[in-house]
Image (cartoon, rainbow, N blue to C red; front, side, top):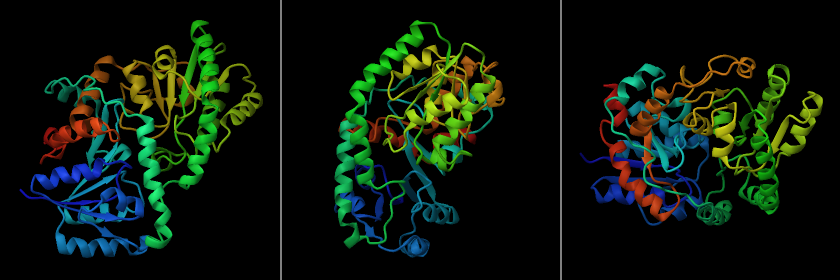
Length: 407
């Protein structure tokens, strides 16, 4: 059956244009709304409209296009961008499929494709027994084919996109990015942070080695990005500073004597918040000096393998922690925050009595999530995109694998 796809904003790479070409080659109609010059550059000569109005008029604009073209599917990256919300509401009103791409729930080698929403808006069941029952029917996916996404390639796509956006004041004068900072601010922050990273990596490696080899028991808190919708939309916190204050306050009161905590910065943090200074101040104020360690880098599998437990808001690092069979505490809404997987008590109780995850449930949950929501490949490299496009087909089927399992 011929379908009519409406593409909105995607990841900054050739992935969406190539997916559109694949769908068009299969006989489907494909359209796009460009919101900025970077969107237009990536999309090229494919059928598209340039929307130059504000958010207030977007719903009416899309309704006009809908009446003319009767879209069956809306394709977008990230379901919480302001320019996507009116389209999602319109799609639901018309009974159209909402195809949401995101970075993978399972890392590495996977990207996410869900219908209706992702993360806290995912359609994945919250009943652990369902995963155990469904897993018995499914093939084993393992780790998939290797699909490493090189940071340099991603950076080149990003710079090309934002270079085009220099023309926005003339071509798209009212457009505002969903990101918390302008590209120039991000690039300046990354340049400053990454310039000192080689020295910090050596220092961090020595610190981690001393903790691990010294047998010092430690908990692990991986930071997320302040602007991530996992924080802004799917958690009770406004920033990672609030998270750090909450976690260290609880650690100081309830963590057993002789235990430490390692806090690791996010690899793509732009360095506008001086976390080292913030954490040092809290360490003194809470009288836990010598027990709190902040690192800018570090080998994640090593940190996970030896930790007493992981505290996260709702990061995909939590999924990695479960793969290492480590006790995990989630402070926000996450697809894996289920009984039998994560600690179901309070943060204060986690330090002394962390609940161990059920190994059988871990395996069943991971395999079922891959079957129903994950595409083997990546979003940035030529090889990774080719692999992802080849593997998208089963998640674009009607019904989707998840819909089929849910009956």
